[in-house]
Image 1 (cartoon, rainbow, N blue to C red):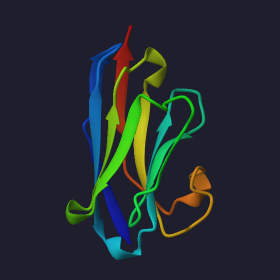
Image 2: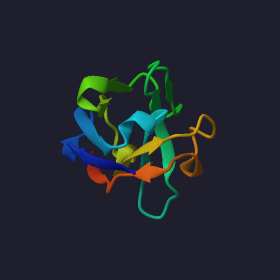
Image 3: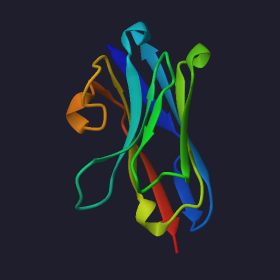
Length: 124
């Protein structure tokens, strides 16, 4: 089992920045990749960004490219999501996820473990 704990959410004005953190514990040696997803009220959970746990390859949703950066610190078993130029439409609960799989890494079903989520609210 892998446990994930997110932190760093909050309220920010449009154009501002936030950094989310996700600390992993447990059987972290089994992780192949980690990702960030978000879910706005009344909408489905959607992929935001992902990173390979060992190689560090990254991927992003088109809606956040150029504004968000995902990174990882293997020594601390922590993944970060730096969010800049935030927009009101970025408002959502953000979830950290981890997977042992090598496929479906932009889908909810591709992940085995989930954090509890952290609220990000961007005011206009």
